[in-house]
Image (tube, rainbow, N blue to C red; front, top):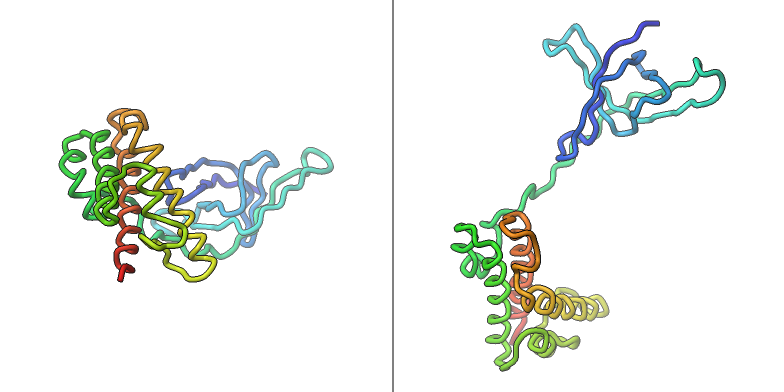
Length: 224
């Protein structure tokens, strides 16, 4: 039985995609490879197909069986072909500045566009603090302000989107999230948070600030 050179593709369609060529005995329902071949369930295998213009046919590794017993010449990896599952496509494939909360865009837009990433993050979280202070009319700042604003009973700003115990857990959780943002991000200064000049990390922090603003949206909508 002869062998064919096939291409194994792992993590197809992701940033971690990798491919490599191996030799294998390819049959209609299965393929057989050397016992040390790094092939696993979920891999895509491109096998030679003289009928197609691109010269290959896609096979999907639905089941991989390792036979590592007996004489060395009998040891092998058996790959059973199966139907390839429908590709999983994320509804949102990347975070963009334009998708952030308008308050973050106003506070950090020009700074981010000009490459002042650390200052952009600082201003974004400052905008959260200023907005909360105005909403509760309390002359406090930082974690103390958030403690007064997001009480676990929801009596001031109620960020819960559920009722009952789930709502109580939500309020307590976001109380700690808002306080933590002030302690761990707003107070130390953005220049200490990440590698200077890193737009991707800055955008991720801005996404966090955006989430906080959207929770304030929820709270303000619930106010009588």
